[in-house]
Amino acid sequence: MSEETTAGRPGRTATAEADAITVEVIRQSLIGVVQEMQNSLFCTGYSTIIRESKDASCAITDLSGRVVAQYTVLPLHLGAFPETIENVLAAYPVEEMRDGDAFLVNHPYYGGSPHATDMAVVAPIVVEGEVFGFSGSIAHKSDIGGLVPGTNSSQAREIYHEGLMVPPVRYYRAFSPSPEVETLLRANSRTPHLVLGDLRGQVGATHLAADRVRALCAKYGRSTLHTASERLLDLTEARIRAAVAQWPDGRYTGQRLMHSEGMADGQPVAIRVAVTIEGDRIDFDFTGSDDQMTGPYNIRPPLVRAVCSYALKCLIDPELPSNSGFFQAITASFRSGSLLDPLPPAPVNTYMPVAVASAEALFDAFGKALANGRIAESSSGTNGTFSYRIPGLSSPKVQYELPAGAMGARWNKDGVSASKVHVANGSLTPVEVLETEFPVRLERFELVTDSGGPGRHRGGLGYLREYRVLAPARFTTRNGRELTPPAGKDGGLPGRPSVLTVNPGTDREAAISVESGSVTLGPGDIVRVSQAGGGGYGDPRTRPVEQVLRDVREGYVSAGSARTHYGVAIVEGATGVWTADETETGRLRAAAHEERES
Image (cartoon, rainbow, N blue to C red):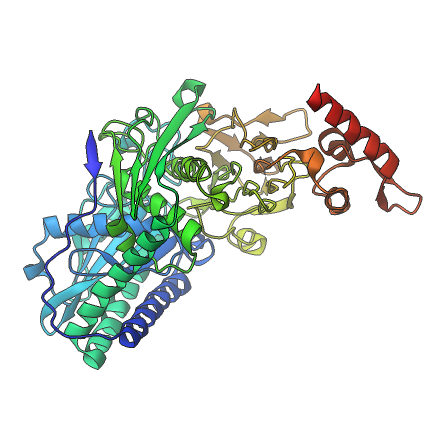
């Protein structure tokens, strides 16, 4: 068994005082610097993944790698940055670092990257000739080799199948890139122009942050900035402990089953957690989770600790600063060889469904102690990548999009439709951008009626996109069809599962299977991606009639589902307006009540 607990804090050498107002001004200033980093990164991005999907995040850390400021785009990176910098420091003594350096790492086991396509760039912040801290960014790359275009393959059985692995290396020296490093990257990518362009944008963002932090040191003093940074972490820790102290003591267990095609030979896989609250202390025990998988559905502990931080932020205050104070307030333990603490060379490229499932296991546990932790299961979205061979181009065009899913209903609200869920984040690529940059036309983009799980509070709806390819292409998926859809809670029903189909409605219609790995397409072929909906919460026959009627009128729920699942008779009038038949609705709901009582 391996255990991750709160790391000992480095010795405090600062003597400068920083009053509460100064600390808050510095906090907001550092957040502003991180926002400026991200704006720079998104505006200079070469790939649609960076500039449209915004699959990247930035942070400023102290000398030991603790995150002092992160303007959250991707919550998991709160755990990734410290691990990344710890590995950079293990490879390069801080005394040898200079202004203008930048270090590159993407190896999940020798860095903090969730998977190899997330490449981290870290730069030292040099103040008065000494390294004061670090600025860093982590951003997804369109392709770094591997079994399939886009790199991430459902067929990966070890980390070596998942593209080029870069341990910590010095990428920039004196503000100039290493030709050797870029030669290796160029030779191992199907889209070298995009990869190098995005990486240089990351370097620019980190060096920008170094300039801004030096300016803050000049304004407030290096010691004051150091002291304020320490206090920011302590304040976050104190706020978390104060909130936890108000929660009922006890040991609360939670579980989330993952059951998808291509995962563990189609058998359910469980993430289990025990949350122990004792006074102002909180512990997360994941040691009961199932063994690591042979496929890429694994995730490393630093990222799961970030999931714990996300859950606490949801339950305490969404405005809590995103910094390493979270990790000072919690302890977490994992079992070596489990899917949450895999042994190398286990593959990890499809880590996000595992991260989302970890969050849902946590809320399953918290919901037994706290009302605002009660939520039905969500869908994290089914992924797919197109690659096109264009005459005259030496490299393929790789169309990678971040999928959205749908939130499960909460104990007091409907779920959110067509949304990234829990620790997933980012944006859907706009239709206009896709059709401009790739040989593809989107035929349909709409919410899927009845995909949200029925309940007193309805699950969020999934969405459907139909892509007509205009050139020879290959479509690759790594998620697979859900064999058990997102579950409802407290009497709510499950959402409708996701479906991937090629050429729907024709004599060539076929389901796209994760086992096949990819599908070859010709001009005119259509791929339909239909995302799953979230689970419902509570008995659907207790949903107010006027809300069911509104759902039918807006196309969220069909009249048939309204009758079957909600016990509401909806009829279409002569003018085409849907109305509720009160008499028939009363009869349907009375009959359902009698059935429940018998």
